[in-house]
Length: 273
Image (cartoon, rainbow, N blue to C red; front, side, top):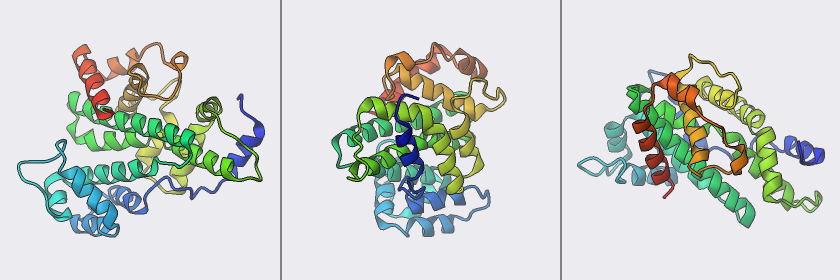
């Protein structure tokens, strides 16, 4: 740890309620943990936040999701795309809105963090489909989107600390990256516990950097492969020297070909274009 111990203490003292989730998107995620959730319940939840509902409609009608006909209502979007994909859209739309700051350095870091998270989400969905696990695609998307949620909490906590005159703390990129490297897993787990996020996503946060990951956890292998390759593609905040040597274990475990990896790179880069 190369940043001051006092900064670690100040971060750990920050309220866990720092805005890292939209409440409606979070409720949708928790609802989807119930396999028997009713579509009407999903629609009613979305309609609690008109701004989020508009974003969902906009994304549902974008070129990436639109079918032959445009959706004019949330109900039409849910019926056409399904509750799981709608939840992915809601979480993505709400997360994108949270990655902004009036502090230039913090805003730059937040935008890089969003780029990485979104690219990983797209990459995870692409990998799930490529290996014949389409039923896992939306779960993989959300796992990729949320695996680094600890970093969002940390940068928001550091922003609050830096803006408090009593702390006399100034931020620089090197310090932020050191904090991310040292604390993002533990703080991500803390966030997931506090907000009662479904256990499957907690596992992704807790284990995506394990030295010896569970070889039987297919979703974890998907997240690790997308996350590691994002570094190779320049879609990660970490400097070059922190990139992994290879991701052959995950690629071999998933049976991913060079053709699939080439498509993965193209789709993850396109997500950030």
